[in-house]
Image (cartoon, rainbow, N blue to C red):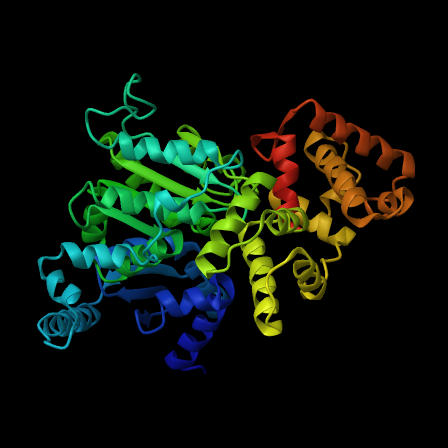
Length: 482
């Protein structure tokens, strides 16, 4: 007959399968105490916040795991365990004592000593971003002009007498701003430049700039340590909250809800909220309320730099290297490298390094030689399965939908998009694409390609996966998943 220890081990293994090993170790290992009787499973936890979180998030998984291992129905009960509660209090007291000692240590830098009043400490914990980015250093072109204008007007309008969209317009208090675009186009630079400018206007600790991952980690830590009120007070009383890489929140419903309530509080108080993301909020897989809240504010894109901006970026980067470029070299590099800012930097470093090694000046001839030897990874080969997976992931389709025989719009339109993208990115013949997507003939693929091309030309919007999509933006979003 299995002992209680054996049963608990089997229960832990079953629960790990259902919620994932990482989540089990984060929330259950060393954090809970399990007691079992014939008809009841009791989960002991260290505090009430922890209890509410586990009950709301994992109750169904715990119930199913317990009944699977026990082989019969069980009642699951959550309680605050006195021993776990006292252990957590002792741990927190020791942690606070260590923090107090570190503050008064003479070997610490002055910034740590100044953190005694709590303001600088809050700022340091909530602002783990690099220093030095300034709006004055941000180069503006057609690809980023709207986003830059929105940010600078936020700085100008942060004083009560200023307007959000210019001095003649009423200030739009509490309107969130979202800046979206691909990697390496300057979203983080713009956000950190905004933070630097706002920090000069507000008292320390009132401007919080951090990544969505940092926000998530701080939220979960405060939840585990019964410090949720402290967390909410710090973020909801901020003069400005700036969050980078908001796409990180996909799949993290509890953090999305916490951010939603934080954003609602800041909006009511007329505070500043700015976020960056890789895509438009309407294309994100967040809770609908958060999508609506962000999409109801200002949403501006930053695109890949145009040729003129690429040349200016190259000149600015070269100036910092102490090796100015001639106009013809900058023009050549801007034509050859048409990606993001990081790719431009990579090409410039390759030229600079090549010139340094060969003890030669940077001329057009040398730039051509350097780029011809500049190692790049081979472009990824896109398969039909890649296209199927990308379309299904973005539009939340069941496996096999794109290869099925369903003719309803929710299946046929995504299938047309998949055929169009397959033709564009794989170069495979029509009949092979048709055979993959449910054994259809080549004329079906041709018709799908023409249909999607018309949608793109006419800027058509489609209602798919419970939301409205501009076809051009939808195609771009799927292509980023390839």
